[in-house]
Length: 265
Image (cartoon, rainbow, N blue to C red; front, side, top):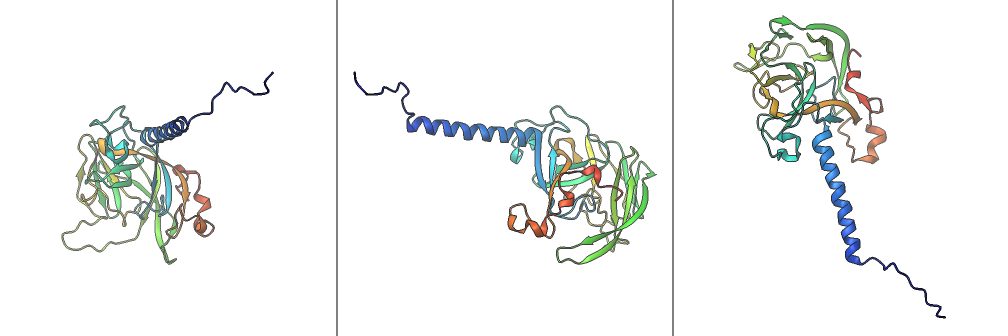
């Protein structure tokens, strides 16, 4: 009797192993694309326009399906359709990520005006449909720049007509050039059908719909999603990728937090 062992299972060929590897990679990329397009997006806050709610260096999850889907739900806005599918109307007070008027740049602001509303700011007070939004002074906010300099700023809680509360900052009187828009005293804006009026919580440091430049009335199609959850936060220009700086830059108190927690602090 022969001592030779017969193996019925042939060793996989190099081509078969390569095929299996490519298949796994493609499947992983498709899953990532589906999540990125239809479920969540990740944004990093680069400027102070939404202070005190959002700080420079915050990493946020954006709920992509909150308002349905448009071509901007896809990476690089390559969605194969116009308008919105499964659309759900945004609500007053939502923190919204959207495309600017150039249809390329992403902005994040708070929705303060719905279709058909009139919006105006008078003496630093927001008016919606001629009614002043409640504005209550709370403890001052310490605004710390990238050099560690501290500026004490007046902080308020605004209560929108729907009862949504959020904090805002007021740096005081704003000096503007002749002919420029004064963010504390604006004209009356009428929000057209299918559009929304966005403003930053840092009222004297936000390029928003009051100026009608990069941010105009935002169409429903140009909305990307709703910011709901703060994942990570790094101070002083820190970054997720600079892991060696985490001990000095990570704001652990802001990790894994709902944005609903950042009001009336």
